[in-house]
Length: 119
Image 1: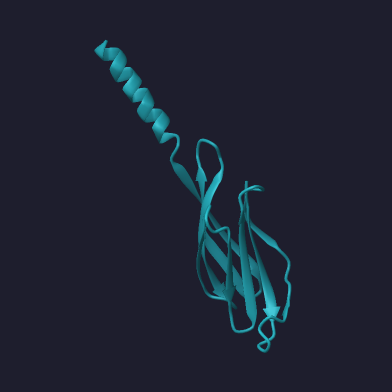
Image 2: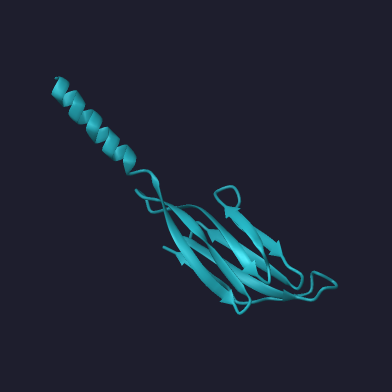
């Protein structure tokens, strides 16, 4: 009986270990003046994306973190706007760099979406 309990306990530990998330790194140049680096956290057992975090450097600088509660981020630079979207349905992390005029700040020319990571 003890040996059976130990075997069941060992199996439970192995199965519990399979649910830990894995991190996948990305490093993508989305424009001549913009680089995004970071990680996407993925559930090892289901493969579902859990979260993404990263750093923008170039025209727009800063850090971002996305998860189930926050699936998009907007970062502003002097003459640009960076949109980052974590689409859990399509299992993609995408970004777009828009060129903006300084005044008014809402006047931007949309850039192309670039996939940073996808399943």
